Length: 437
Image 1 (cartoon, rainbow, N blue to C red):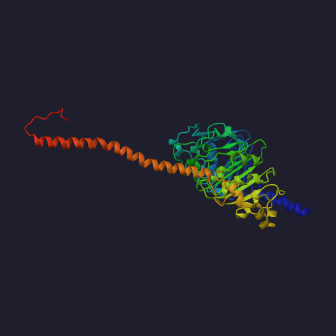
Image 2 (image 1 turned 90 degrees about the horizontal axis):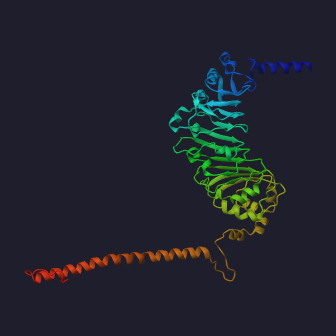
Image 3 (image 1 turned 60 degrees about the vertical axis):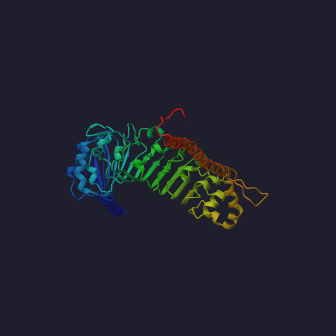
């Protein structure tokens, strides 16, 4: 026992190296952690030797500091020690100098910012959201993942040029609401040549997502969208056309407490109008209360019947095998999760009982089928078609009438010309009587 304890203490001492009063190095995690420092000069990174290899960097000053040129100098001292695909955690900062370029040579790194103010400067001057100065903004340029934690303060305008020529695998925004989004100015007039593959809105209080928050000049290459909220008070909805121009999107993930309200408010029309025809759909009912009832069958059918998708559904395990769930299984589009496993039992009988042909007919508000004859009469569609035929039949007649009205003056002038010519031949020496005609 004593020997084991000694061995453990020796290994702990070997793996945890105190570098200074403010920094220590965990060799097992390849983590360099510095906290409670009062000035970046305290870090003294230039004294670190090459035996240290850094996979994770954690910086948190005692009180809020500016992440400025002093920070850049310290980062420059450890660039040679940082491994590929490293992670950087920054906490308790009051501003960030967007012109810092030390991160440019940190390959495939990810950055997590929390407990800080997203207030950006440019060479220690007030940050001006001027697109002509986009090339000077390099802070986020080479990161692959950016995460803003739930305790970040969005105090000032979050200018889109921070994403100039960025190539991100994912951008995560936490604990945001409509007021915060109003300070994140994504509406730009010029292309930023940005590429953001995945957008994650986490632990959000945002209640409405529209196209003004997803400017195509920034998110045009979006491949995945995820939204989650744990609040009972959030009734989230999505504008019908918000994803209509996103042809490359491959995944939607929605996690909510009020899932029934979400389905009814949007009718999932945003899925029907999505520019992508093939995607994965992940629906997570946090409250486990939404059971995909019969009354919502048409909502899912009308939105998804023309899409090629796979879905994963997480809801109450006691939910009945409604025709909505059975239709998703029948179409081969529902991944069999524990919530719907029981629906696979006696599946053919469930399909038969649902009478999907009749249900689908009921989902079409424009079609009414009579039962007295075998003829199906589509009233509204037929009336629309007849109106179009009448309009197209009238147009040629109108064109002909206009042509006749325009042709009459030419005919009258021609008759006048012939009669005048014949008169001159018959009486070549007489003065023409202008009143004769």
